[in-house]
Image (tube, rainbow, N blue to C red; front, side):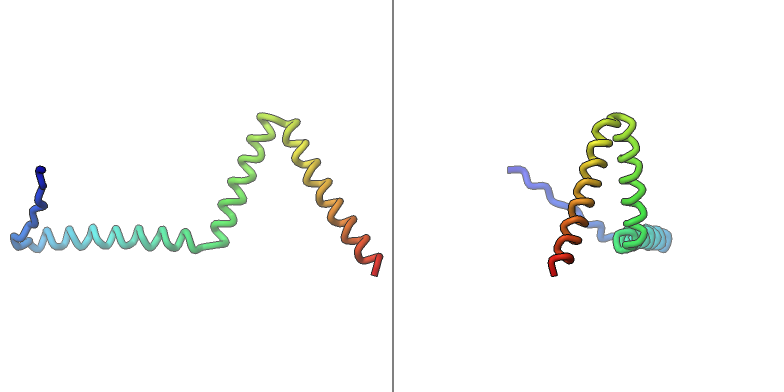
Length: 93
């Protein structure tokens, strides 16, 4: 079996190399922090997801308006049914 051995650069680095390495590390850290902030910003996530849902819904409606109408009708029917059942439950008390 051929085992490849990783070589470690043990030569001392110049100030320019060290500064470049530090700059790369800062950029990587900033990108990581930005990604974490993006993931944890729930109001922004909700706005993004809401816009994406609206765009997909419009595209779906453009491609298949009958199916979209059926989905809307089903949603309205379910909502009306739930409200009706709620009203009936309150009236029985």
